[in-house]
Length: 307
Image (cartoon, rainbow, N blue to C red; front, side):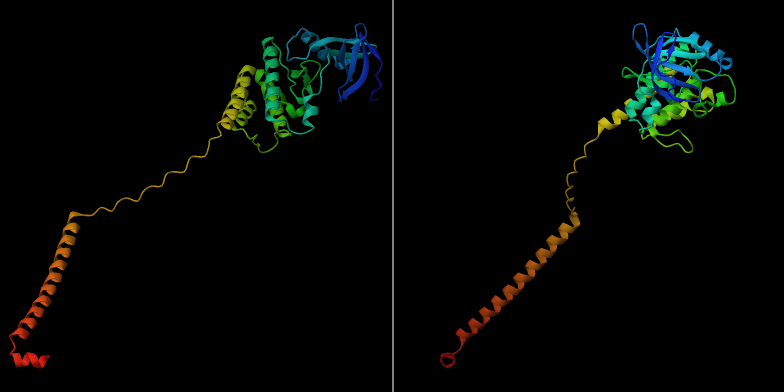
């Protein structure tokens, strides 16, 4: 029954309010009853006969200490109940995605934090095999990956997990690529790929989710660097924001080129017109002078008559 373990004591821990529940476990806020240190306790629902491998896995991972790995405090059995105590964290990525897609910066930073944790985990000889939103927790303003006491769910399985083939570091990278896409788009990549709006980031996600493991990023650090570069490229494109180019100065009309032949023809035409003008003028003047001379050559009686 939901919440029926509140107030119970399991080992060194007093269970308080229930945080979440799944088909496999219940997660409670708790405190260490000896020093009041706050923590979280996961209580498993499976029967003891099926918990042996899981509890053994938890025990081998309790030694892991990294800023991006959730610290396991204890794992034991009390009064027939198997539990795992761990550091107290905030919201899971699943809870955040329920409110809608994350801003690009937040989603990428979360993925980078997980990759740092995966890099350490892989160096220690472990695989997560269960990278999914429920196992990525917000702790002290940074994301941490829960790598113990959990198994992968169908929606985040890599192809090799589904087919029962050999797993590798790229198995965790595939699952993280799916998680990153979901954080950015608000849903898992089902059907046609929808761009994130950042081509470089799209390329990183697509490479991380290649079906063939040898075509993915082969190390967490490699994907981390690719993500950082993708965000840098996007920032540079936004920062450039080119100013509109100034309007070009009007091009002056080219001067009409006059050929020498045309100039000579114009001079001849002008000279010809002048010659005609002066010829006519001289003709008029000559006629006028001829009339005046005949007048003065008339007899006096004719001149008188003219008057």
